[in-house]
Image 1 (cartoon, protein in one colour):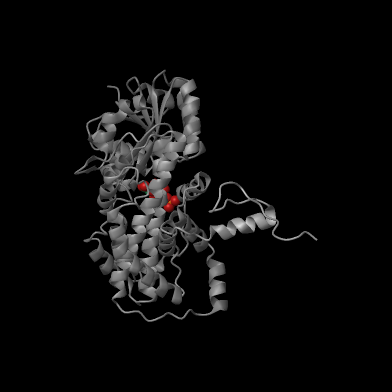
Image 2: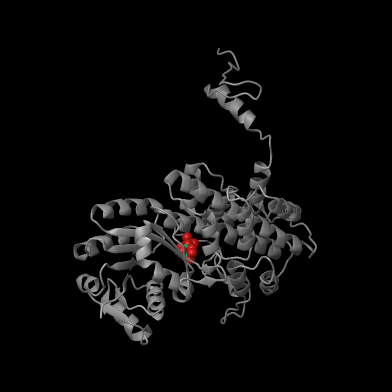
Length: 468
Ligand code: 6PG
């Protein structure tokens, strides 16, 4: 028996994806660089599923039916290139390699180009949902040629998470579209995680709530329009008690946030493409700043304790609206970035489809996505979702709370970069006159960079002062 698909890389994500595919009725060939891991996987986790293990690359490739479909679940970066090089001598024309890791879209473009010269098809595929999702149904974002997607479409749609709007998998677009969309997914993920953490910070520092009480609030919110995977895990985290100390574990975790790069790439790409994604960008900086633990400790001692203002418990309702507001604007920024990239790189991404496949399986799945989809459906040109009557109503209802939280947090010295940058993003984009006129004048003053005028056409320069 030959396998229908091959999976390379048997870390937990790879194992789970292989099992998910096999449980959907396909025979799966598996291979891992270290044979020990493969043996262990087969012994401990395979229970009657059609899994065909191999211990060298050649036998692995030969155990997959032609044209081959091989999914790479290896660490992003050079391991992907190394694995492709190892596979190539045994592959035949029109075989398909699918990179399911969090690869940078630039690498995906390069691999697509290189492999096309060798007659090998390639898909760059975003997969979201962590270990659980890989096993029970992730959100899948494949990009490349439609021809390549068609070869694996049946498997992907079967293993994907399902919602009332269908399987959370779609052909995202040309070239590196799949990895690009996954990268932005993670940018939004960073922003929402940070916004939730800021709300938590206000609750504990200003409202003086303990972790379990905070958990109860998030649990309630998860039954409302804020329902989302990230709010859900937050309440579960808050309520988790450390066996050893009997304290909420979250209080014992060191406040240094790690990152593997996708959020940073989103921020960098937004800067390169000239799309404003301030909430997403500051969420990355928030993680960076958190790393300076020693310095923060020292400076907090020098600067002294911050005076927290008093706030009523009613602030919880404002926090809820403020979080909802930031979540909405994080999606607004992310979608705008995808749209711009789609134009620049000819991805041809359907944003409505992206929102649909983010409804289930992925880390940023949220009830809010239904609202976003209805706004975009009204006017598909409204790519940042702002120009809509529904958005105006939403903002009317949430902005006063966001402003109140912002002001109390500021007065109390609690940093809320995502909550406050989301406000500035909205206020700036809804402002006809920004002070950029002064920036232009300053640039012209010191650098003769010229400016345009509002009262006549053309490019102007003024000698702002006589040179001595
Ligand atoms: C997902 C996650 C997943 C992973 C990130 C975390 O969608 O399933 O985004 O891809 O958890 O790599 O990224 P950081 O380590 O950068 O926080």
